[in-house]
Length: 220
Image (cartoon, rainbow, N blue to C red):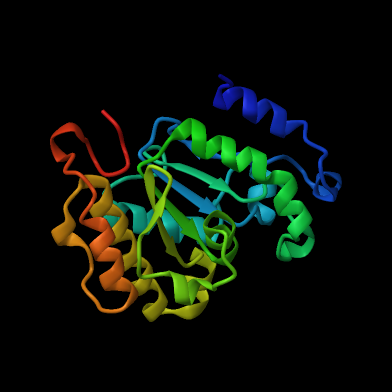
């Protein structure tokens, strides 16, 4: 079986789409390759392209704060990746052909890390992994079966910075849902009707694993 290091080496030399021509460096991912929690964003911005690490600008600072406050972890205890590994020009949205070209790398990351919970950050990550055209406002507030894991969609931190306190509060609630799934405490899932109630019914199938777990997002 290929290793994450081998997939990363292949990605660093990738020329499958036009984004390769404008990148400073490939932003493959960062964190613990054995993590229970995988976060997936859209694609690198200017700062990420320069530093080779996802979420290092203002959005990254907000994400780090929310991970610490809501899950009690930092980015070394989870794994952070993006749908596309090279920066789209002018921070535009990634195109379908670019997403398709990069999809094997993301699929390999999911397979090799084998997280218990995947948190998608923004529209493109949620739509790509759930195979839907629904937007994040419709998708968030629920947990979805994702192979042997659960997927929790939430906003991109940049949207939270633009949207203010209400969006940040909803993002916090989504991370609380992810934490509850990680530690197997169904009683901690945010209450609600509609899609929230449906998600809670799905979450009842999550086995209790608190005795075998360390901090949320980290395997012992």
